[in-house]
Length: 117
Image (cartoon, rainbow, N blue to C red):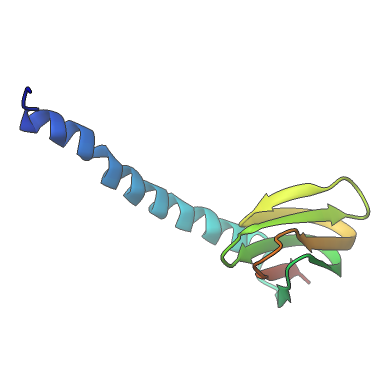
């Protein structure tokens, strides 16, 4: 069996921590930008949706949807339109009814809805 040189192991193992660091840095920037989307004057609601349930909310204008929990996937429908899958963050600029569906059969999700007023 041939031994693998240390430089090869270093080249293979070094990019992983660097990529993780960059991902966390840019994810924070994206989330911060999304939370600033509704503007300075906003209302924030926290909604807990049990498994296999949905919630309907009235929205008016710019809104940010942030989904947290074990399963960060949700399905939304704006004004009865097509279903859209959402992972963690979604920006919406609409007036009317927003339906948020938790399609998970096991885990609840927490939805933070920040809308400009």
